[in-house]
Image 1 (cartoon, each protein chain N blue to C red):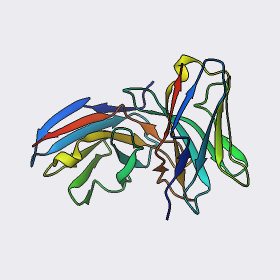
Image 2 (cartoon, chains in turn purple, brown):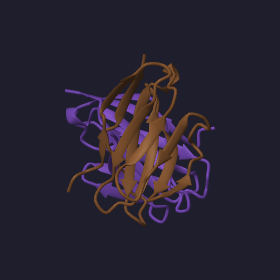
Image 3 (cartoon, each protein chain N blue to C red):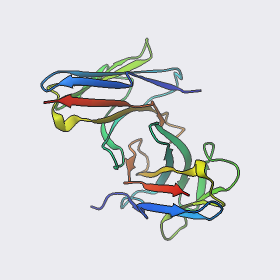
Length: 112
Length: 113
């Protein structure tokens, strides 16, 4: 049973465009929602994270939008660059758990 | 400040052999997590350890797999009698207490022939 569902599976966007990746969760006890970026052959790198007490968090070109009532959160990559081409994973956790539950990942390709 | 270190980066084992994967957490981090990533799939939690304690091993197969994080030295994920289905990338992450943020190592890619 996958606790975090991620879509789309893959995404092609032109340079300068906006990449949008969506995630939905079931467990209302989750209270931490990070996004990770992974390049081929590398480990996941923490990109940005949000807690349920805010609806949006922005760091540079990356923005997380969080909708608690809908149990959904999304990553927006503004002004996408070819260097952003990677696989992005959303995840969720809760304070008493420690472990992260990951979505299946979205492969983003930014064309020049 | 060195990141999470894992070794070896690549490991080839024949069916039936043992695999030992090592993870050194970031300096100051006392929480270690192991995840497995199968080809074209997301990461699946295996085990969560603190120094000398297993906190949560709910994601670890009951047989052949074990993990430890001794008082001194790296955390070890041990897979006995490996089978082809164990071929995957194994990632270690660490976090400082009390923090949600987990930082991942480069992974060990295990190939079972």
